[in-house]
Structures are given as structure tokens and as C-alpha cells.
Image (tube, rainbow, N blue to C red):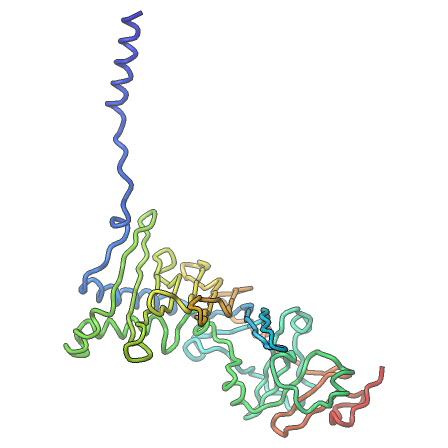
Length: 377
């Protein structure tokens, strides 16, 4: 019995000796490190090349994003403050064609009809629960068919408004109004960040300064303001977290920072961007991507805005969400998707002519001045 027990203990000891040692889990310091100044400058250059190469790989791209804006509305009524949330929905078709003008959005339709009744949105789009907008530009004027909530409806008598209710409005306005109102959708600026203040542009500016190309004085001034942390992920992937310090809005005010996380899993495109006041973010943007033939296309972009209340508490006040509904990349453009045949108005629908400051309503025999319209059930 004693021999058998001794033999069992011997086997246990032998198995413990032969067992492979378990490596200790990496500490937070091992998983993330801060780059030195030379590495920081080189990494900025690397990120610029990665982001721009992803954009350069897009030759033609068309599709549709859905847009949702959630906004907190505060109203004072009889000494009481009420807070509620309102949501606005839009359908945003786009067409980018590098062959035309370096991925310029096809804002204007190629067809320019002479008569109003020749313009007709695609019926499926009109019946959509989303507030689709349709725009045709004719010289310096343009026609826009959209929902009432997207524009002023002054000029219609109260009696007519009550009889007609809500619904579509056809606007005739000057072309510059569209540009001033920011009604154009360009996925490069809204979801790719490819504008004058874009991610790639900002990185390129600081890369040049840190290299000394802008002079030693600038290099010494801005080098401490840019830091990059490298965070290890699974399977050899990593994130690069770029922090840039900006001047306070007021002398001796709270310092401001931008903190952007770039991810190797998405061709080093940004996955999170934060604007910080001190250590607290007042704007946070998150990105998710869809990989199409090695190109990372933004599938969902969410931007949240916060305000600081007198109590010092941070509160979410609005949110914008872009979601890719359908997309066709680097294939022949389907021009029919964007052609509009007619803007035929139905009985009782309204037209607001901003070029002449006149309001009209569609009667049985055509448009009549709003003040002359008599609603017939």
C-alpha cells in the first residue's frame, strides 16, 4: 500500500515538472507605450500615407446613407423648464466619380429640364418614411422637393395651412442658398473626414513641423504638443492614439486636446475621435467600417455632442448618425439612380418661390397664389 502511494506521489511530482510554464499576462505597460519624438514624426508620415491611399483606391462610389439627428429641445413654459428629444431623418444618395473631378460629389443632375412638370422624383423615394430631398439646378436657380420641417413655409395663410396640413413642399430658390444652408451631402467630409480640417491634413501639418521643415522654432514649440501612444491588440494588430494639445479659448483657460485612435484592422483609419476640454470630452465621434476589396468604407459614423451645465455636470445634447444603406464601389455608375423626371405636385401641395417671395398651392388647373386657393374636399 505504501509503495503504491509513493508511486502516485512520484507521478504527480513528475507531471508538475514536465508541465509547460504559463507565461504571465502582459501588464498595461507592456500593451501600450509612448513613442519617442523621432518615432512620433515618422508615425505621422506613415498615417498620412495610409489614410490617403485608402481614399485614392476609391475611383467610383455611389450609394445611400441614412442620416438621423437626435437633438435635445429645452422649452420654458409658465416658469417650468421642459426637456424632450426630437429626431430628424434623411435619405442621402451620393455619387463620387474620380474621373469627373477627383471624387467630387455629383451635386447637380446632368439633365436640366425647361418646364416644372418635367421633373419627377422616383416614386419609391417619395413614399419612403425618410425625408428624402431632391434637387435640380437650372442656371442660378434650383428646385428642391422636401419635407416641411426642412424649410420655412412663410407666405401661406393660416386657413390654407390648417386645411392642407403637412406634406411636401416644392421650393424654388437661388442656387447659393443650397450651398449656404449646407444641404449638400459629401461623404468625404461627413464620414471620411477628407476636408481642410481632415485627419490626414492635420497629421501632415504636424509631421512637417516636427521634421523641422517649418523651422527650428516651430519644431521646438509644437513637438511637446504632439504625442502618440501605441497599443497592442490581438494577432499582431495595433492602435495608434494621437493626442494634440491646442491653445485654450481664453488666456489661462482650460487646455484643449484632440485625441484620435487609428486602427491597423481598418487600414489605420480612425475609429474614435474626441475633443477634450481638460480631461473631459465635449465631442466624441466613433467609426465602424466595411471592408470592400481591401478598401475600408465607413459603415456607421456616430457623433455625440455634450454641454457642461452650471453644476459642472456633462450632458449629452445632440447626436448625428450616418449609416451606409447601400453602396457600389469601383463599378460603372448607374446614372438612372439620380435622374428626376418630374416634380408634379398633387392637389393641395405647396410651392414656395423664394426667388420672387411668392407662395402657391396646386389647384385642379395648376398652381394658384396661396391667398386665392380654396380647398375642395
